[in-house]
Image (tube, rainbow, N blue to C red; front, side, top):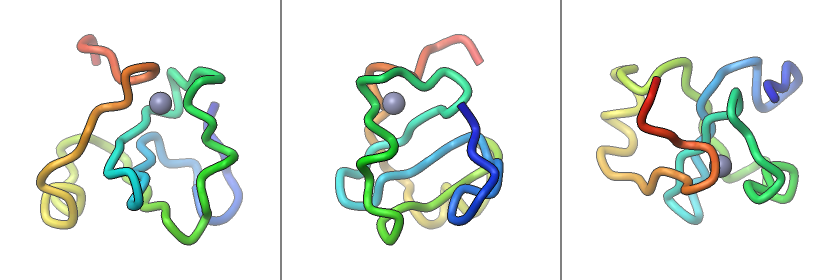
Length: 71
Ligand SMILES: [Zn+2]
């Protein structure tokens, strides 16, 4: 579920800086435990092809719960 307040800003992809894991909030599952991630350790992106994402985090672990192959 997307969150529109700070620090999420309604963007779809959430990068957990500490765990180097990327989550898709549109397909968020309880196992993602998004709300337990420290808000100081989050980067948000609108798309997987966003240049900022590739520059900031050229490598990431796709979350096994919410990151599917389709879309
Ligand atoms: Zn996830």
